[in-house]
Length: 144
Ligand code: DQA
Figure 1 (cartoon, helix red, strand yellow):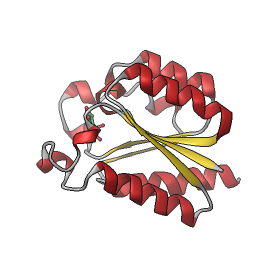
Figure 2 (cartoon, rainbow, N blue to C red):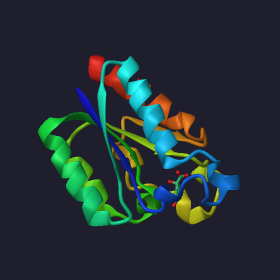
Figure 3 (spheres, rainbow, N blue to C red):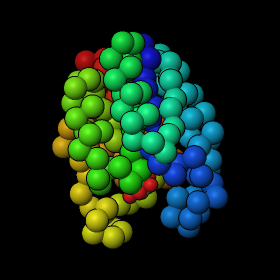
Figure 4 (cartoon, rainbow, N blue to C red):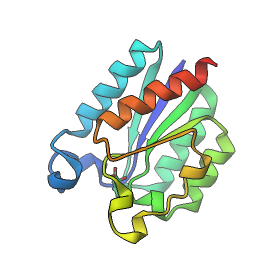
């Protein structure tokens, strides 16, 4: 089955954006890693990145048609978007939330997530490897 990979605002700049915080790997590297990890677990991947909240919400809605789970790094929308949370709830697919950085070691406004309490798995601070862990755990959830 297919997994939806969602990356939110500013993650298109991965690799050049604050590399001390987010590392040197690019969004293309993330998408390749997720695709490879998912394939090893028997899943396909559809990847979307947008800087626009509504585009992400539409992508989550579309996942209802043909996806089995969602891996999402909502970027700053993590801390602000009730609408994205509601979209994830509406679709009802298992969610794996990923953050490259350890948001809990950063500014207080990054400590709250609108997604974490509705996610099956939350991985922070593992850099791009977190996406691979998220895929593996999502695949386990889907196989049980
Ligand atoms: C992030 C953490 C967020 O607080 C931030 O707004 C991002 C990236 C991360 O992957 O560490 O854009 O989601």
